[in-house]
Length: 310
Image (cartoon, rainbow, N blue to C red; front, top):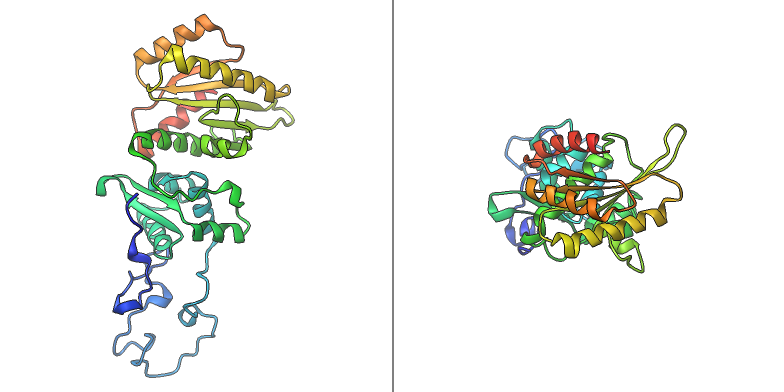
């Protein structure tokens, strides 16, 4: 991971100025008004008349006081922490669906400035990526939005060889949480399951999705796998699916179960279907092609795909 950005350093230290803070509408934040002659609202020696604002106003906030965070601020940090590492377009889709991109960029910059997250770009110009810091985790936990056990504070960035797989897992998780085609009560990615399932089972799915039974709905227990072709089918991947099928049946307690494999390449999909037909696993398995689209268009395509697969 690139070294932590120094953009969040104390703007008053060594005469350095931090970035101008803005609110979510793009206006300068109240405590970042420049001290300029003739501006009666500006802090500093140029102020020509006393302020009538109450001590609790943002402009008079003690710099040692905690930074106020809205519920949306905290929900965004919690999602980043649960996702291990999140792309900005994923944060946009899940937390800011009605806002333009610039709002999300300002949010990410503000959270980075206050050291609640680490933000960096893939190859300096590509995908915006971010993960939670210990300070961000503590703020979310203190507010009661999530528990420390749910949140991850990575020491290093996801390796490039694993980045595509991580992005797909987070894409699918976001779609499943959004209620397409039906909302799931629990959506847990592999890294959360590795922490929760002790001792570790023989196989851990990329995503476990649970919808509890309710009137008119028997519920659903699903394992979802992102298959990018890195595992040999006969020696590794098919046995892994068999182990998952056994786990699902042991957890089900009468709830309908299934496995959804999202794979890459028509040849891979055909081979997978043929070998699964020979094995005959005891749970329903759907084999679907991953969308060609990525980022925001990929999320749209996944919603359609998963609605048909489930």
